[in-house]
Image (cartoon, rainbow, N blue to C red; front, side, top):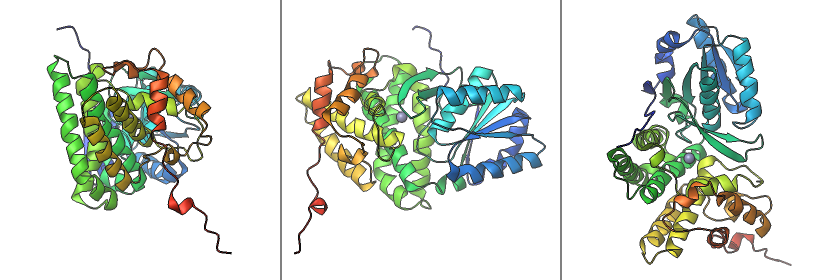
Length: 372
Ligand SMILES: [Zn+2]
């Protein structure tokens, strides 16, 4: 067997009600002068309270609000601030892009990263991977980091209060793990990869069983299973499977779609979920099996319950001309793209046709009734 270099999990994971407060002593063992980073104004108050808690423990944090997505500009800026202030740790508290930025800054500086996901929208708090975007949110590339975070704090009290839309996005991202990894790793001889794929299947089943209840009721038991499944288990699958347990089409299609402009910028998982439906359409077009078609209609029903986009119209593109869609297809099919991990050849035209099949028919509510 060839050498595999894995970063499987954070050194420590603290999860449950009040996990933040319970982690303060652990944090004092990790750093004395951390840089707390975040972005959204909605979560600013949470970071301010973190700062207060740390000060009471004798830790001297400084804080920084990122301006954009996890982009070169923000990374460089945070890197310099951190360096000039002799920071000895990064505490990233926010959504996937903040967590990705924090992990990368810590990696560049060779200091520890503590991730505190404030929603269950992705598994970025867990993984040794950062996605880089342009300042306006176009996917550029992903970077493999030296290690997973030193400490992951998944505080149920905080995450429970996040908008249900973030959980729905996390569900779409996590459910995609099974459909992508089972396709790209079906011939793998590596036991770790096989086990990771099976874990992705169990996670999918749990999301199907509990996802809707969790979305409706953040106080339910289903919520705990689902939120931790999206933010933690999905990360274990990535860590265990490693690079061989790769994405298939859903994530590359997401990467292509981020190149376009939106009226309301969709979340990562919302575009991944739509990409997953397109992936199943591609599979349906390239095989005689009825399974992709059945999986697609099952997912369309599930996503509709969770208010996730299931048509081109519902992803909220600013300009829906075929020119724009061709641009996304071109990016998705670039020669280095993971979409070529699919077990059949794929080109821009096939992808364009598959996306076009998700044009919805005009809804009755859009038909104007003339009463005069
Ligand atoms: Zn993802």
